[in-house]
Length: 162
Image (cartoon, rainbow, N blue to C red):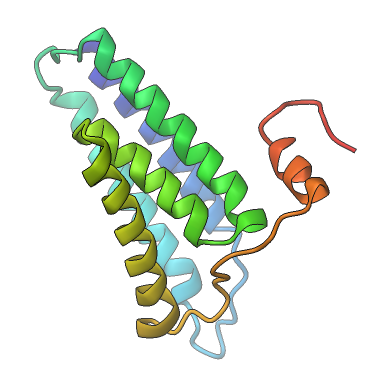
């Protein structure tokens, strides 16, 4: 119950900051282009209403997951962080296959289906993005150099760089 109210307050502060940032968007009143400002204001308004709802009508105390679940979530976050870092230097196919395979293995710890899921998702998503949706800037694979890998890896290590 207190956690819901704290979360609602944080969301309300974020929504108000979002609305304040949206008011700074410059629009041309004479051309009739008010949507660049109106749409973020509407999103901020809905977020503020939802956060007030969470604050004034909280749920009963939640049942938090067991310790093993927190560990699995930490592994998933780490895998997705590595995926985001290595997507540029390695291309789409290899990082997607590895990340999808690891996450699939976490859902059902059976290696063969996890590997097949990773490969299938990687190839399927590549075909979907590249050919069905026409996103031409997706690179299937890259042969990385040591320098590009180090540059990607230093993103994960604070205060290490050039």
